[in-house]
Length: 448
Image (cartoon, rainbow, N blue to C red):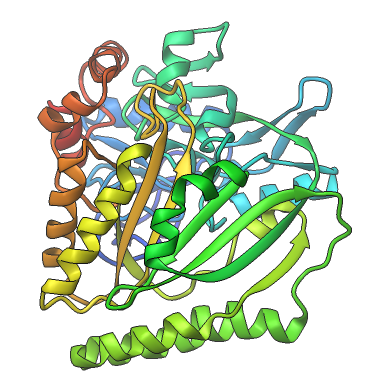
C-alpha cells in the first residue's frame, strides 16, 4: 500500500514532497522524485510528457498487491485511483468499459447492481483493474481464463504522450501484448472487459488427502468448471474447492459458518498461528496438522464475486509458477518430497489452480493448457530457501513465473519459455525506445 500523498507542485496532480511507497507485503519500497494523481486522461498525458522532458522514468502503481518491483521507480509515480468508475456498459456486445484505476471490488459490486458479472476472477478483489490485468491476475477455470484474456479493448498512454486505442481490430499487435504489459508499453487509462448476465455458482469445499487429490486431479479438472485445492505442507491433507454454475437460488453460508471459516480460521486464527510459527518455527508442523483438519466440508450458492473471492488480511510473500497442466502433479509430488526431507517450516498452504490456453502475448497461459502452483510464506519469515528450492522444481518443468510475484528468472530464461517473447520486446522497442517506463525489474525480465 502506498503512503504517498498528492498535492500541487507546478502542474495538476504532482506531490509536494517525495514519500516512500511500499507494496502490500512490505517487501518492496521506492522513493519517487514526485507522485502524480491525475484526475483526467489529459492530466496523465501531461504527466508523462513532463517526465520525459525532465529525464525521469514513469511508473503507474495500483494498490501494491504485486510482490515484485514491477511498479517501483525513483522517477514519477502515477497513482491512477482518481481515474475510476464504469464509463459505459454495452449489453448488446456484452462488455463494460472501466477507468483503469477502478478497484475490482467496486467493479464487481457495480456490475452486480447492473445484473452483470465477469465470467471468472481471482480470489481477492483489492487490486485495480489496470494492476490486476498488467501482471496477469487469474483465478481457476477449465474453460474461462485470466482477467487479461477477458479484455476486449483498452486505451494506453504511450511514451510520447499519445492516447492509443487498441482492440482486435485497432492496433491489434499492441492489443495482444498490452492486455498483460507489465507496465512496459505504457500506462493504461481504460479497459473494456467481457461481461455476461449475472449467474449463480455453487461452491463445494471438501477436505481430501494429498494422495487422492493428485491421483484424481485430471478427473476433478474435467468434471468442474472451476477446481482448485490447497495442500498443507508437513501434512498429507488438502482442502478442495469446486465451483460450478447452478440455477440458484442464493444460499450463502450462514453468518456463524461464514465467520468461523472466513474470519476466524482464514484470518484471525490464521494470523495468530502464523505469528507463533514465525516466533517458534518448531511448532509449525503441529500447527499445520491441526489447521488442515480445522476446515470442514461445506456447500453454498451465491453470485460469482461472492464465491470466487475471499478476504485476505494475513500478509505474506508469494511465488507462483505456471506449469504445463500435464506436469503439475509430478511437480507437486516433488515439492512435497522436498519439504518432507528438509528442515523448512512452512505455515502457509500451497495453492493449485488451472487455466485454459489463451492468446495474450506474455500471459502465463499463452498458448498452453496451464496449472498454477503458488507457494507462500508469512510476512517477516525468511522465504528464500523455500522459494529457491520450489523454483528449482518449477523451472525443471518449464514453468513460467507470475509477473507480479517473487521469482529470480531473467530475460534469457523467459525467452525460452515464451514463444512470443521476441514479439513483445520488439513492440516495446517501437513504443518505448528510450525506456521511459523502464525500471530494474523490467530490465531483468525483458532485457535492456
